[in-house]
Image: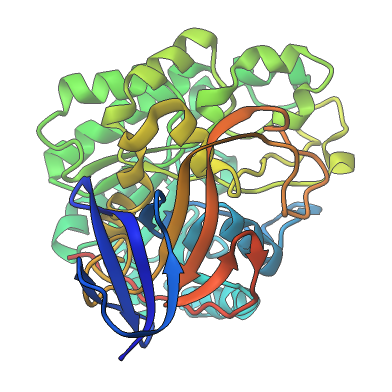
Length: 432
């Protein structure tokens, strides 16, 4: 006997939809069949898309930067995620520069994350590291974290080329991702800038040149390079042209919905401060190029890191906490713009690249029963969010598609828009 049957839906498997029934037992997908089998509970998904639960590979809940902490806790952020169909997210450990501090960083974040409603993992974050790349990699993997995030800017947080090169050299053999916030530090105008100058102070060329350099290093070393929050269409074009042999194999591009929906002109408006994040929004030409190159982008993350309206109400970029929200609306925004081609970028792609596959990201027997019931035809206008953030940058945008119900590990956590509280767990990851 099965615990739950999802009946008559259009199930997304191997890049196509099949009319199948999904049978769930003990939190796992147990069977896929056209037959009606006996189950304790049934859910009629007729005319609905049945999708793998979404994975957000890039969030920042309860992130403290200077005197500010992002407003969403692991609990509130994960609740907002549920309404967006997200059943797994990957947050970040606080930056460390010595391997001896890594386990403590993990324990601190994991204690906070235990309030999460859904499953989660972490990326290790480093700054100006003093320990050897191999020591950091080995220790991170023992914690179930096969990914190391670093920055090529931000002063004391910066990691330099020689260390990046050594990390990339061992990354494929050790099966870890080198995740990089990619901006050419010497091209950034530092210090006090007004909001209208935000994009100009961190120009497009700072990303483009840095990404090309890092990709060359990745090709030369056969390293696993994952570029986070890519903003420029030109960056993607260059990688497709020059590094097609490794793109989506050992070189991966992540981007975020806000880089598709807004451009840098908003910084000239009286609400420009609400759209501040780093890297910043780009000019209209780069946004259009980014849209044209969606097929070459492997994953969509949100970089979810909202602050309050009050915290954002300042005139200078050095005083304003950088970051916006978006985890709740990410999928419907991208689905509205691109349709079914974006499904893999929220499911199997992040699962594979980040070592969650085949536990997550796919609807096959043995996988976790993380499932999204999605109405592809319902249209609505974004009005609010379940985030604790007191403003919504996507407000009044018309979207197509609606998350109807969500299951995590075989249990409903959202059923016909009714939230059902449960508890997530830390997921150890291993890249295959």
